[in-house]
Length: 421
Image (cartoon, rainbow, N blue to C red; front, side):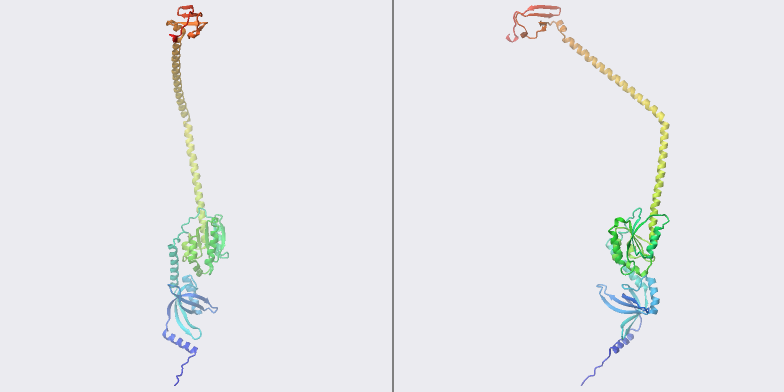
């Protein structure tokens, strides 16, 4: 006995799937997903590729196509972009109101009826918060903010697109400032929108860092362009480069509502390129006023010092006769004292010399021959010379003996040495 097989064509099977899906899931559902691809057809329809990733591994665990028909997309697009500052582009997370469908030819897809911008905003905020927390954990979040500007910042490296209207506004504001201040700039070209924004700005920062001694600071300006392009500035690699950059950084990327991550780590954040130029001019004007204040204070101090010295000189001039007279009297008194001291010293010296001479005179008198003769001594002369030794005489010599009252002449009979006695 044979059993007849039930056969279905592929179309018939897909039709069954379609009917089953419509029967089991007839409603619209809020679905969370990440956009992996988005493109707008010339017809006005928007085609999305949606995915879901496993949080722990990042592995894709679900995928589906979604379509926003032109009539709906014309309404959702401006609403979503105005609310979030972003376009429907790869990498963002969305919460959509969708109905599932299955087509015999095109397979499974979702039809998007609405989008909740608050979910995307929350996801972007969570992403920014996560990047900032990572920077804080690494200890670099406030490094650029802590850099101190020089007193007179005049040399700036500018990162921008040369064709950007914001760059033109920035330069015009600097060059035509009302005070005529000179500001020196060097443009480091970078893409300020699109997929190359992050890498081109980092490359420009690297080039500036190689010549950091030539600049006082860095200005990153954008101005104009779609608000969705601000996503490039919520980037960890870009933020960590700016946070650790050796020169203070000013950001003026042309948005007022929200701060991007690089705004939060830069030294100074302003709203627009024009505001960045105004900030620089204000710093120069502040330095100018400070110098003017110092100059005025110095002038006042010099004037006051001259006045004080003039008064001192006037007082000195008025007191000069009295001071001179006092000085003369003091000098005269000192001269008198010196004169008395000299006189006293001379008298003392004369008295001492007189006493010394008298002593010498007495000594000479005591040892003189006459004095010796008067005291009973005698002198023996031989040929007019005083006889001092027995050896000076010989028997038969005539000698003279001097006495106090006269002279006696005698002849030597013999001599006898005291040693022979």
